[in-house]
Image (cartoon, one colour):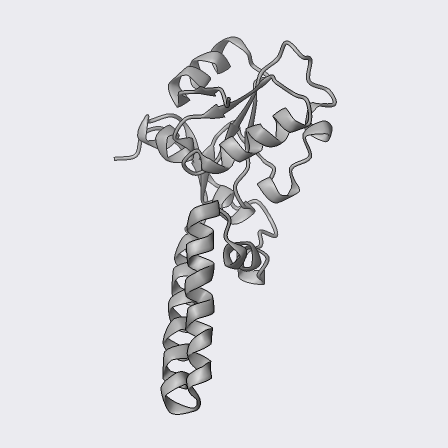
Length: 186
């Protein structure tokens, strides 16, 4: 079972534990756009629990945060499989953190990975249908393949297209461009 804490509870804990570890497991581009001020970015696909926990006492809790909680839960599970139980997911992720009016750093606004996936998948489906009508009916299979991939992504909460898009040059961060610390945003 994944243990979680509300964003406000984590923030209150930060008041008494100045070195509290808050790890944001989103992609670097998502992190760059907005993140909790004290968070450190370690993307889920590169997360190595043993290297993070190497200097963390067993009595100290590590908090994991993502956009809305799903990847944070996956990260917690990764830690538990590796034998670490002193991890907690931040309920509702960065969205809940921001909605609670807690301090965040904002950087350059980027197109979300989810939106990029929708645009690319939709484009491939339309092109597949057009090619099926214009060239050969077998090309309808392209649209069917994308549809099956979207169903798989929905069932497993893993998106191959999203993982591939995350590695594209426009989704890479070359330097930290976060420049604004804010509390609640209205």
